[in-house]
Amino acid sequence: MGSQSPARATIFPRMQFFSRLSPIRAFLDLRRFLNGREPYELGFLLLAMVVTGFFVYAFAFDGQIEETYTPDIIYVEQYRLDRTDAQIAAQQKIDGAIKAERLAARRKLELERQASFKRLDDKLRSVGL
Image: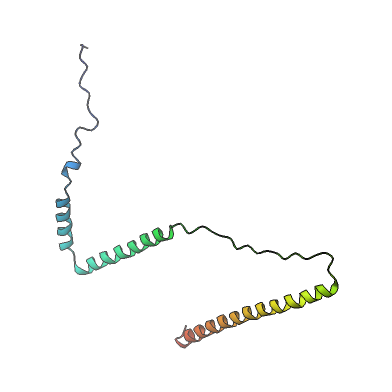
């Protein structure tokens, strides 16, 4: 071989791919495509875009970072070891009344929830479900 090396073939001869792209030609092509469609096809296209957009929005909205978590700290009351039985009984009466109020409130909420489910069940039975 001589002093000259043979011409090397390039991997990408000439990047002419992007030279054929034109936004105006793309718009005209889309317009021509949509003009050839039936009205119901365009309706389904719009419906598909709305459903897809909703899910994209839902995932984007769900991915937002929430505010900093601040824990609710519940402190336990500490009692002295040298309390008398009378002091213990008096404290139990006070705590018993508070506990009874909490249980009554919880029971009231449970009854309201059961009543709402009962109303829903009655409505569903009236329509045959």
